[in-house]
Image 1 (spheres, rainbow, N blue to C red):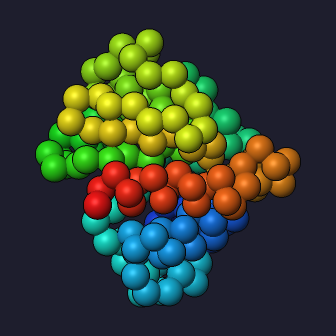
Image 2 (image 1 turned 45 degrees about the vertical axis):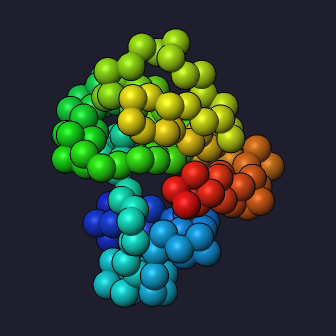
Length: 157
């Protein structure tokens, strides 16, 4: 078992977590130290990590049935966060599942890295997923990822 399956904390113990947690710390959405352990003292600040797909499917490629099954949990998360103002969506699956969870039509917001969309009271900020595949191929650079969080920080201030 690796990553979140091993630690119980999303993105902990894999490359995506290294980039995500470093970025959260840099922009003030987390405090402490990220050390790839759930007991490392890292705490989120005004932020929450929610997965559109709660399990890690084979080859990290969820199929429609898995995405649809997990959406009830995503919908419940949004219902439990009445004051949420901004959501960073890591990848197309998160983007599309969030639109559905919020009851928005799919044509309400087209996915694109760096795109921003207002859905009701929430602004969505799209990013390519911070997976090693995307960073190794150059589809997503650290600067591109940081730019999304800079926009979120600017929006919230």
